[in-house]
Length: 464
Ligand SMILES: Nc1ncnc2c1ncn2[C@@H]1O[C@H](COP(=O)(O)OP(=O)(O)OP(=O)(O)O)[C@@H](O)[C@H]1O
Image (cartoon, rainbow, N blue to C red; front, side, top):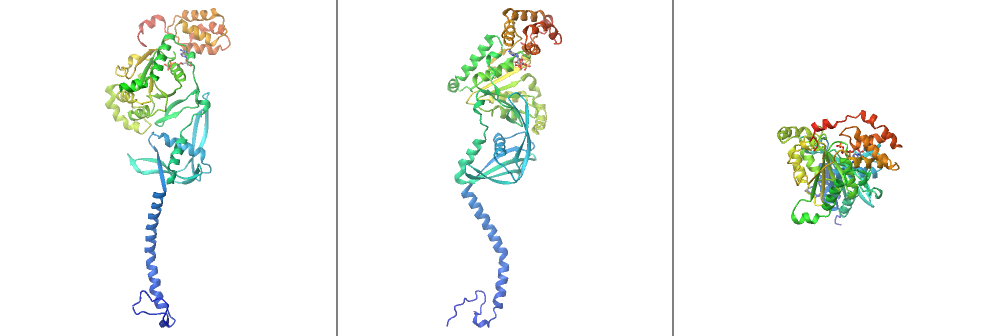
């Protein structure tokens, strides 16, 4: 009967099961040895294949989206990264490894409220469900991307290929949404770590009527703003950048900032406040900030006279740019940098840039030339009508001749620098009684540094 057993594949003398005499050790020795030798080969092949198969799997079946974050030691934060972290902190519970971070925010009345957020830690992979689909999230340092010895961080979101839009949908969801009750409020943004961040809760809109200015000035500026908002097509057809610059100048405490806030409320815009003297600000970050404001925002540059260096300083300043690059040095914004940033504000949806200064005479003509500043408005110390109007605003039930008495007593002080802020300060001591406020004028203003009319003659032209 022919043997049905297999022949030894290695041996040459064709030994069989039968002729081995029951001993098969001579076949097993080479087989076992061969097996032993082939383990590393098998492991290598398996490892190689596994890598190939898994990468084939990931590449064909999944997609990933990287959201880059800040360089760890540089004050520039990507807005999307920041929003995504906040979203993850809010939506992912029971993180296996988290990073605690203290956040403080202001409520509607400016009260600071502290809270601790648990952010996803570095290096941990988290799987979570979003709209019923699995998403893999990993927050990592990326030391391989190095620039001037700085490291970056990023978040990688992965999911099955057909979920591509889902990841982008999640990123859309991370964008802070304006609550319905906040629709009629003004959001104030400030600069934090190189990007725009909301400061506190949205504030109630300041009515235009609460800012008491000469009717002329108010109307002139409001008409210009409304006209600008309605003329986008006009700008586009003529190839003119769709932006408008305003300069409000005048002594302190007369209502420049209040007016800008009320304009924002009137046209339903938010306000991005940019202090050019802020630490860490340099020409590059200024440019980025000016061109990345949230939608429908007024850009407010306060005290522009104090901010920039003169043109001659530009060279020295560029040396200091490196310091500011670290994000902790003083502002190194140069005059040229500011001009570039102003010129670069050319968004299609229209940008309103407001600048304020107490010292218009210190501004370089290049900065306030038409195109950069299209309208200048002096917000001066209050005239008699304004004083009378603010008195009525605080004491609406007062007798008519009381406001005249109030104006008369203020004028008797023979001072030229009584601001609306100072008058408001007086009223705050006498919330219930206009008469008490009138009686206290002399005593209250005794402590103020008043400039007499003769001194004012000498200082004439300081503010105008
Ligand atoms: N014209 C005004 N009408 C009503 N309130 C005013 C007016 N001017 C000033 N105030 C009040 O005085 C305070 C300071 O005003 P505001 O900050 O607008 O002045 P400012 O001109 O911007 O001052 P600064 O130049 O110092 O920034 C605010 O609380 C504001 O309500």
